[in-house]
Length: 348
Image 1 (cartoon, rainbow, N blue to C red):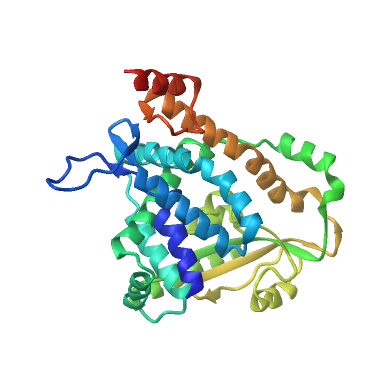
Image 2 (image 1 turned 90 degrees about the vertical axis):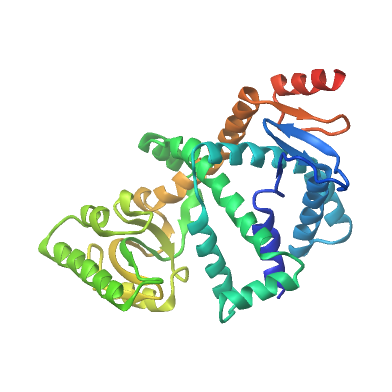
């Protein structure tokens, strides 16, 4: 169950170990040292220590050891407190906005169960307990990560725009980087059947058959995808992207290999739903044409911009809020304003 141990570290600690809600101490309870105050919440020394412990375990799970592990650990542990403050700020925004992540918790638990090839959720829970975690801690880690991602998605990533002109300029400047083997660019329409009753599955099949009928009648595939598809790519007209040979399942590649550019599959049943694919283009090898490269380019540009934008947003949350770090600790995400606040607070 080594992989499950790694999963526990990822999900139970979420983006970083959990900051605790400020509360009155229980009589007779030994008080933990307060490392930081983030608006109405506090972060404790035990949270920082847990974060460092989880970081070391995570690095070891990646196969690092000896001097290499120690070097990376010493470099990355400097950001443990920063990450705790980041998470606390994001969770406060999620609470203010009334966000929920219970569906994500259920989906993630089921995903882990399937990956670990365990028969039931109860069996997964038993393994989690064996690893020394409580079920609620594990779920809370998933919940915190999902809520943080929701806030980042709404406040940051959804606002990153990439124009066609930017994509074209990138392609022209890096054309030689798009030498690729054989592959296919496709669109898709998906309806889901996971955890549905037999009657609901039948209704989903009827739905996708209606979509296929519309396509065969001559309706635009992208418009049909926007109307019928339940996949996250629906709003983009079902643009699934370019896949090199070997990246899709053997069964799907066999089906697509028999189609020419512009042709559409019949309804294909997959593990958790029904799908329809359309061949947008086929690549025989060599430099990708612009149309086949643009999804990868958009992702490259997005990755270049997303982290600076996230840090910019978190800096803004620090500036409009109250962040105080105790003496002897450093918030590597502090802005000039929050840095001064911490300094002045400690002098009082």
